[in-house]
Amino acid sequence: MDGQNKIIIGAYWGDEGKGKIVDLLASEADWVVRFNGGDNAGHTIVANGKEVVLHVLPSGVVQGRNAAIGPDVFFNPKSFFADYESVIKAGFKISGRILIDERAHVIMPYHTAMDAGGGATEQLGTTKRGIGPVAKDKASRTEDITVSDLVGTGFKEKLNAVVAAKANELIGNRITTAAELNKYANEIYMQYVRYANELKKYVGSCAYELNEALASGKSLLLEGAQATLLDIVHGTRPFVTSSNCTAGGAAANLGIDIRKFRIIAVAKAYPTRVGEGSFPTELGNYEDAKKERKGETLTAAEKKKAIDGDLPLLGKWIRQDGREFGATTGRPRRTGFPDFVALRYSGMINGADEWAITKIDVLSGKPFKAAVAYEKDGKKTTRFPFKLEGWKPVYGRKEYFWPPMDENEKMAAVQKGYDALPQGMKEYVKDLAISTGAPVSMVSIGPEREMTVVKDALKRTAEYLK
Image 1: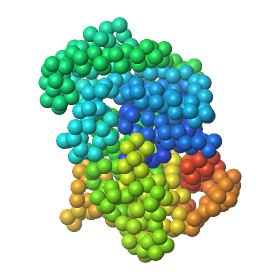
Image 2: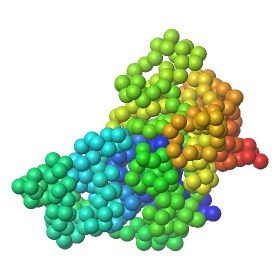
Image 3: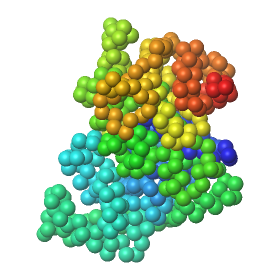
Image 4: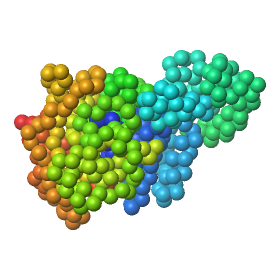
């Protein structure tokens, strides 16, 4: 296996910190490629004391890498240009090439309008960025608009035909009226033709360009949005996204050979979930979480109660310390105990070669357990069920704990390597590796790029599996 090419995927329900891992590895890559999703995902990068949140552009642009947006990405031109400006404004230079696949589907104003209309989208807890509606049009094959259509000479005619075909839907959703239909189409055209003129220079074929790059010895780093348990096929349906989030999906979507890649699964040290859907190890409940605001702090008395077994307070403590509020929506994320059942499933589905564990520092000073099985109606399983409803976690006997690390201790661990991490932390990492059958190559102990323990991590954790 050629270790220089890597696929980065999320192992839980998203928000694992994939952006940081991609940013960390980007310096070794010639191309960084976004292979799925849309601007419903935000990847947060902290570098040189500055924070950048990207929704469409691959995280590698911050390091001047060539960046590609693949054919299975739902492409929002407005968000693309907003990302571009935010990178420049933060003081970074976009020096690499940008490639947008001609086959990518374009998010149009009526997609976001439909998504904002409530109904099923409200029940599923979507980000209201138009992802579901554009995916529906993609599947229809006759009402979709690709990047190729957008920058082509027949864009106006194509747009008019699509709007006419969707007339009943647009009128029924009160997005426009029969009398205003042509005007509505023209307003979209005037807005999007300006995008098209700016985008033409970036448009091409990822399949050809990336395979040629591989053939010439260039290295690729593939970046996924969302995560395995939100995958349209393998996730916790119906509370999933509209694209393939797995490593296999990356290869299929881009038209490249997965055998040339090393697969790194990113697992936050604790799972989080945004929106509705079953969450076996959840601490507290979603209704209470929705009332929280970023920046709330726990009193000393509340922290003591959390340590003594108040699980909802522990969940809030993790949420606040971890800043678990959506980069795209600002919504509070539900928090839970680690789930080895889910991670085994994700590792299996993706063929994970190694793990990157993020935000493990957030668990410092907090006692926790990990789920090793599920039970329901007297039945016990170590398999991740297709339908999670009603399944309760079975926790291992071990309780993990380590005291908080100060900045000097963190820097010492980065410099000295894995052995310098707290014993309780290493116990948790060891059990995760043994439970999933894959070693851990990176342990993130802070949001900054440099706050990542890499030295000896893969070597030491591989020894656990012997």
